[in-house]
Image 1 (cartoon, rainbow, N blue to C red):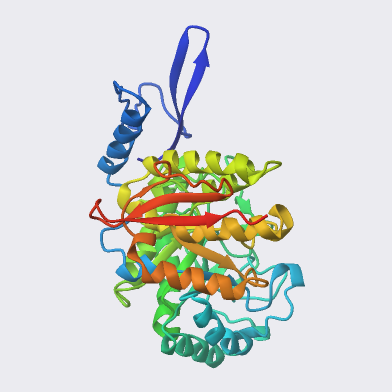
Image 2 (spheres, rainbow, N blue to C red):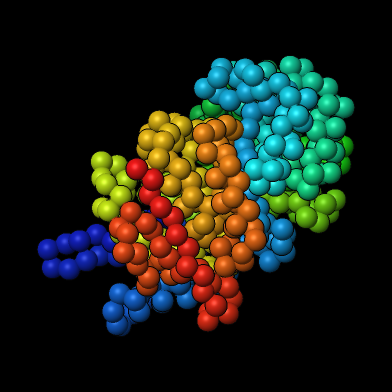
Length: 440
């Protein structure tokens, strides 16, 4: 399917309407037809639980992924995201570059962070997402040899290293803009170049030429530096439509179809070099699991914000339990591991500032112990590092806390400030009660 779609339910005076909107854009001639894919509507008889079971079965039947060869080590993956320059709220200072981060690797290993994702390392802040050379190392961070030593040391400690793959397009006046095939750039309806994120060209993610270019870039970092994969920045696809007459598909195919295909092209190439390499795509929704090993779980983050805002623990915990139970039915059962759960990242406000210190820690525990892959942002652990280390160690030690099914509504706690659920392995008779206290 080349185009995105939005499904929903609208209440009317005499009932409800099932709606399915297709985001299809392009030039169509009189008498011409487009194939935009299939629409599935299923009517289920029974109660709410029967509908949930049917939804889960339907999600499973779509075969949306993750890819069947997704690395097994991701079962126990815990991500630590950091800027080598230093965190944004510190003005990109105090990071210490590759050498400074290398000195922190043992600490991160003891914490339980077995995957270190480095935010863009190509250029200097603040414009670190305006790429001039996809194969460059920012001088302020150190040399290529410094990066190689960092990756090598991480591997000795049993950690994996991901870089940011920024594929939305390079700066217009960059050397990369001159190297890439000109047909790869998206164009507006008037023929002008489509720009994104400031003065950056917009690559058409659905164009084979741009897919090959970015796959070559990714291959360079895996072969030369030994990195273990990438966080795919803007993995949802191009930020604009491509009206170029040389485009391989209709304009709207640049996203989300382009995002799926770009991730797939890069993943295929790097796994020829490292069979355990993985792709973590900055996007959401089951569609993107067709090519990504991991995707952002922004719905979890937004649920944490919406369900806890202005309420007490006794009020939001039942809502969260219900939401978790409903939400997991919208994905294939094997895909839940690939949902990267967080309560803050480099694009959000700090969790302690938004939720308060105690609730932020409780929600971090929920991100760790509910189904998914936990992600921490640089220095998030300050103030409860030893507890966080114990949580991650417990999650890794007990398969019931990261594999199999979960039931968030069957069991309850007499203490209303505790969120309790059942987590089981593949064999449903083996259940482990998991508890997450909402710290005041």
